[in-house]
Image 1 (cartoon, helix red, strand yellow):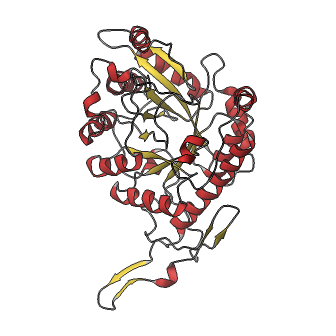
Image 2: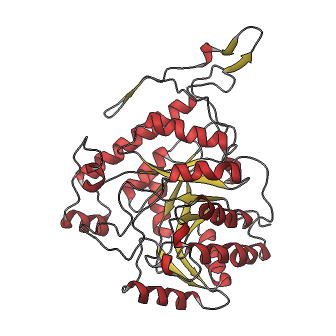
Length: 402
């Protein structure tokens, strides 16, 4: 295998990333909210030896972003809880990483810490967390504890043009930074050998190896320690999706890897430079960069372009995405991945346009094409998700005494 093999994961979102994916012939819309559907699609990903699946989630009804008042009924307008899906999949899978999306804006970091740590136990060291902020009024209204305004058209235009966040969104990322720091400290609040389990002395834990985190910041005051022992990975993998320098700064401060969205026209070079700048003062391992692509791959019956065109006809609109859209063969996308990999992209997260069809093509066509080039593994190594991603598996505990 090549000395710098590709890393490859997939982002799962219901029936797929195209709004009409649920109407594709092989989709299973009646099973979208069943454990069997999720077990089957993730089993396909694991048969393809993929690094991880991320599971999308939000606190709003799924649909186009910033489509206020959107009452369309020809799309999947419901979803399951991503963390609970991951929890269901944990004992049924063996090697693939499980990375649910959990928002920080309306979710207490103590709860997130316990949930992800528990997932790390039940998956035997394969848990991750995709951090997301909730920047809209609709999501805030579900809770009624704070007011968040939607960006104005001018603010949204500035965000698209310059990457400049509205003032309230800036505060949400400051809050997210603190939330991740609290979660990380809570994971460290138990030393690895804090559990004694000595029946003879009636001591289950060594209290001296549990620590108050005493975090005090603008948004949180959390004392700790956690109620869950330190996770098997020490620090489960933290990820974030970024489209702008400010979010790259957040990722460089808080995350292990960042998902980015280069265009086919310009490639990843500019984004890689911005991330290098954002992470200039980062301490420890470098931030890993994964490029997102929405994929419609060729099948035995149709080309990817034909499949996309048919879905566009069904939805009545041309598909658009924050990530670049790829249509073509497994060999063609393998060429693209290899090119961007040589430019410095560490890995890729593919978003299947139609979950059932494109995930099968990724596992059954793309992965063999990459293996034929010596660019992808032919079996899973033993170990944790951190090890699978090439991250250090020895994670110091900030509170442990040497």
